[in-house]
Image (cartoon, rainbow, N blue to C red; front, side, top):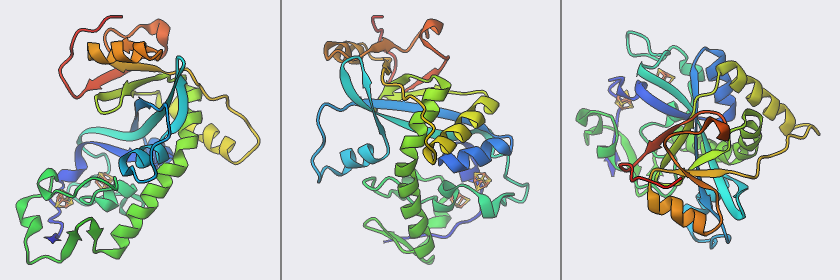
Length: 265
Ligand code: SF4
Ligand code: SF4
């Protein structure tokens, strides 16, 4: 069993990329924050088994699309981006928007992804936060604090519900590139006004007859030659991460988890 009490060290409010819901993204931009859009995707030739927990999770948080003739699922993560202290962090290490802070801030240091093992050493909290004298926090995936457990439940539900709106947002912004899952991310940094407009239009479309045509022709991006070639061999569209060809759509950055391996174009 893990015990925990926040020491208010403020480390979880510095140099971060915070995953936000669609509604939280709207609030974040309205407050003047910067939004980044992380995209990754995976070929999806068949539906996974019902007891394949990671694949079923990926299915819930993604939307169906295609790359070339290959069915795929695309995962879009809307991210509040800041280097240094969060713009909402006060000098006394308190949050200036405490009552409206994103869910991810309320959950930390617990895990949101259902199949990820909770490992205190992977968290930013200092050792004294994990003293056995503190209240029980986690055991075998169970979070003891009922409020935190409920916010995790809401967060998972919202992420699944948001997938549809995110698909429309991508169509409105013309974003059609995605990293191969588990290798990296394609990161778009849209103009805040354009991002806000796309989010609000997509939200309105979700509850009205307005239709926004989804983009079904996505391109995989990878910094690994084998991955580009393997994707092309199954008739998916795949390209090297560098350099980005402006003819192929809005500019993005590629964040690779492994060193680049020269890829053919
Ligand atoms: S919104 Fe508040 S709690 Fe969240 S990172 Fe910023 S200062 Fe910290
Ligand atoms: S890093 Fe951990 S201990 Fe420090 S403020 Fe965040 S939750 Fe609290």
